[in-house]
Image 1 (cartoon, rainbow, N blue to C red):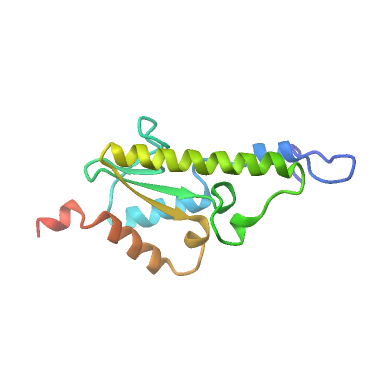
Image 2 (image 1 turned 90 degrees about the vertical axis):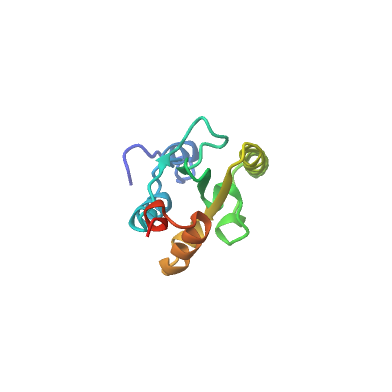
Length: 150
């Protein structure tokens, strides 16, 4: 067990300590998408804070953005997204609802600014077939600038 994690009286890991260790940037699914997108020849910016929702990958010349969502935090309809912690479920359900509302508002604001967005879910990214993920990214982004001149 890591030193920073403490045990409660019941022997369970302290939730707040555990939750503090979860990152919002540079996650494993995000890194997979970044490496694949770069390997496909696309160049991008990361986490543009001036755009609604601070998208994970931003393609300014195409006015397109990719969000890499964790199924648990953003409530995807897969098995990972349907889990709710047993401790303080009312708190978590409210938090998840606020996350979903914020996501929807950010997508709407981004669209109103003339941007297109793609949401990639953690469960789609961590599956073994990266061919489907690559096709999705290429379909969304279209041809690269260096390919259109050929």
